[in-house]
Length: 224
Image (cartoon, rainbow, N blue to C red; front, side, top):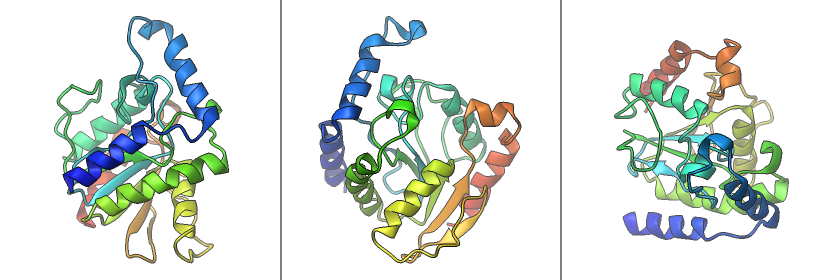
């Protein structure tokens, strides 16, 4: 299984199928944010990360411009990742409460994290064709996770992307609508769970907090 993951990761990193995304991610890596001006940005597609025997898959929509696109690892190096890993650590799904850079010693337990779209899109809004191009990689990641039982979609847009992905393979009921901590059984017996995105906006407005997110992760663990 390790070889299949490595082959998939190499194909993701080399991907240039979407010219708009290639141009955007490259431009961000060139211009940089002032606070990271002396850092070398990754500026390429982002692969999944975590326990390859995972039973839980965490899915975001796409890498952050100055998070994953800078550090080269999904949900790493930004405010959303700070909050997310604080909660994952409390739920005993990670070995440490932060995700700063690729060599920070972070390890996931029983879980794997990825994005539906592998490149940062302008305005955080991918086109339908861009998502469809990336669904091939998303499908391969899911197939490589042989023990997968639950997918946790981080945010409504990621949830909708997961529904769109599965609609291409199964007949999905139209009444599946996003809600935090709502569980849905997909036709392949995988559970799809909605979660508010761990963004600063959601945290600052009180839509989500550490206890609420941690409790969801604990609930997910009990379901595997």
